[in-house]
Amino acid sequence: MNPKKLKKLKKRVKKAQQAVHQAPYISELMSARDLFDDFPEIKYLINNALESDRLLKSGLLPQPLPTLLLPDDIQDTIFNQVNQQYPKDDPRGDQLWNKYSAALPKLDRALRNFRDYLEDTYGMWSYVNAPFAKALADYLDGSPVLEIMAGNGYISKGLRNNNANQQIYTTDSQAWTKENETGKHPVTKIEKLDAISAIKKYGDQVEYVIMSWAPDKGETDWDVLQLLRQNYPDVKFLVIGEKNGATNSKKFWQEAQLSQDEEMQKVNQQLHSFDLIDEQIYLVK
Image (cartoon, rainbow, N blue to C red; front, side):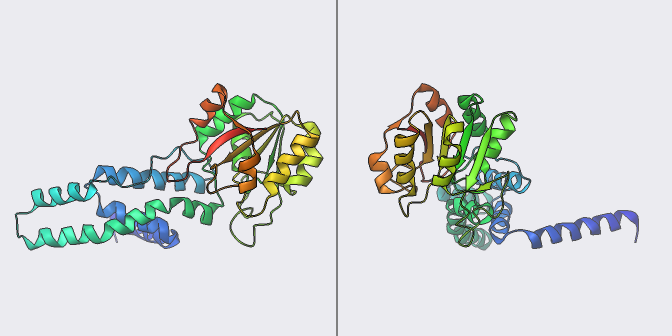
C-alpha cells in the first residue's frame, strides 16, 4: 500500500474510533449537522452545542450559547429549498422532504435537552460560561469567597482562572454522587463539607458566600440564609438560580430579599440563558 492510501486509511480508522467513543447524544447532533448541512441556521445551533461540549471535555469553561431552539419557520425554509432543488412531483424531492421531516422533531428534542446532557455528563447545572466567570471575578474584585454546594466546582474554577491570588474556599457535601454526576468530576480542588458546616468553618474569613443551583428538594438553602443573617450579617450572599422555578426551595424564594444593582446587572448580562430556564445571579439579604 502506498503512503498516501495508508495515511487516508489511518484517518478513516481514527475517525471511526472517535465516533465509537462519542456519547450517543453527541453522535446524534453530529449526524443531524451532516443531514442539515445546507441550512446555516440549524448548523449554527448544533455547532455551538458541539463546541461547548468540546471545551468542557478539554477541561475549559464553555462560551455563551444562543437559545437552542429551532426557528419557528424552519419547516417552511426546508420545504422551499427542497422545492427549488427538485421539480414538483419528483420522488427524490419527496424522499428528501420526508427525511428532513422525520429528523426535525428528534433534533428539536435533542437541542432542548442540552442542559440535561450537561448535567448527566459533566454534573454542570448552572451554565458557567467563561465571560460570566470573568464578570463575576471583576465584581468580587479579589475578595475572599466561600462557595457552598459547589458540585464539580465550575464557578470556583472560573474565578481562579481570572484571579489566581484570590482566596477561594470551594466546598460540597458530595451527597449527590450516588444519584448523578455532581461531585464525580471535580474541575478544581473541593473540600467535602456540607453548606452549614462550611459557613461555620469559613464564615469569619470571607466577604462573600456563593450558592449556585441549590436543590428544590429540602430547605437547606433557607437554613443557610438564616445562618448568614443571624451569625454573619456582614457576609454578602450571592445566589445563582431560577426564581420560583427549577432551583431552590419555595421557602427560600419567599423569604429571600433579592437585589440586582447596576454592577450586579453587568454580571447577570453574561449569564446567558440558552433554554427555557431563566437562571440569574442575585445578591440576597
